[in-house]
Length: 85
Image (cartoon, rainbow, N blue to C red):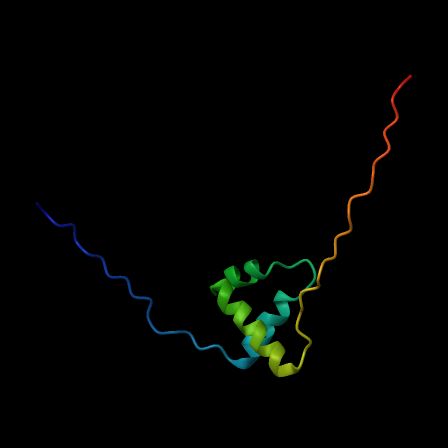
């Protein structure tokens, strides 16, 4: 039985993002019609990292956070049907 070789892939050093870079990317992700995942993909970020920066920068800026809104459902109303005739 032979074993396959092991390939070790290293990514190198971690990138360091300045606060200005983070703010620029977060602002770009809030632009109307822009997909947050597209912004992350174009810059080589993982989507969760960009969402984390959005959360942190919005908390620091005191921006209101999005809250869930309760949904109230009403009972179904009777539907009147008309028979041809």
